[in-house]
Image 1 (cartoon, helix red, strand yellow):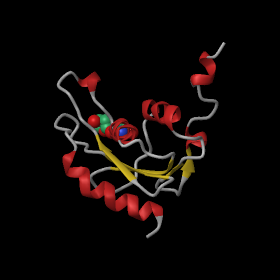
Image 2 (cartoon, rainbow, N blue to C red):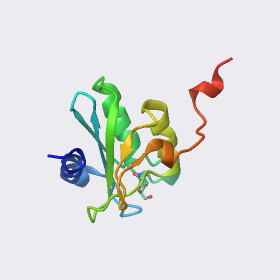
Image 3 (tube, rainbow, N blue to C red):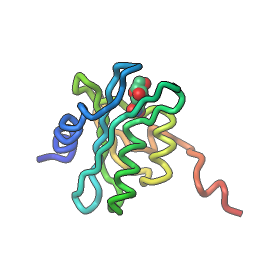
Length: 128
Ligand code: THU
């Protein structure tokens, strides 16, 4: 199965684990790493709205815990099974942990993280 199809299926399977009672907008993220392992995450909202955890952040936490290999492909899905592109905050979170070549599914075809977050601020800016 093609990478994005595989990830779409994995994200669909965990979408019901999202906790989104405030926005009613469950999101699931699924990413493939270089070893062929899939890492997933869901959004987790909070009554203190600003504390909401996006699906991509949950996925990055799961990937870290699993000591995953570098991420190669990512999909984020809404309840309708449509691709959503990561929000600005998530693009920044992803940039810290994935190569600019990370391929992200969108409704108009795959784009790289470098395209979604050009001229990114990152760890290199904090070096002496
Ligand atoms: N959300 C994500 O999980 N990822 C994104 O990239 C965009 C937004 C979540 C946050 C919130 O729980 C809900 O979608 C509505 O914004």
